[in-house]
Length: 143
Image (cartoon, rainbow, N blue to C red; front, side, top):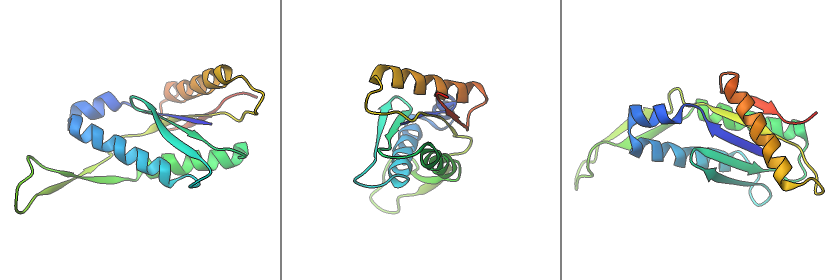
């Protein structure tokens, strides 16, 4: 299980506006879905600026690779936003980089007998350790 939280997303919203923030969340969702196995893994918005990824039958090392792919894709992404109100002819587009937008990721490997509440609490703590260490990093929960 991966739990992602976008670092300093409120500042991103304040700098670029809520429309750009909404568009950035859509792009993050696309990055997450594009980084996982279609029909096997599940990626979804967990709430606010958090995303979760379920990676069944995946080792810790494989999950770390997925987390790195998501983190790197996010940090190297550019999106295009429509500037101003849409026009009938000649809509203008502006480039907005996901500049400075990074993600803190908690990772946990768990089995079918592990209590869901404990798993979520542990991965959440790992994610907050990543944020506390400056963000843009992956922290593994457990031993």
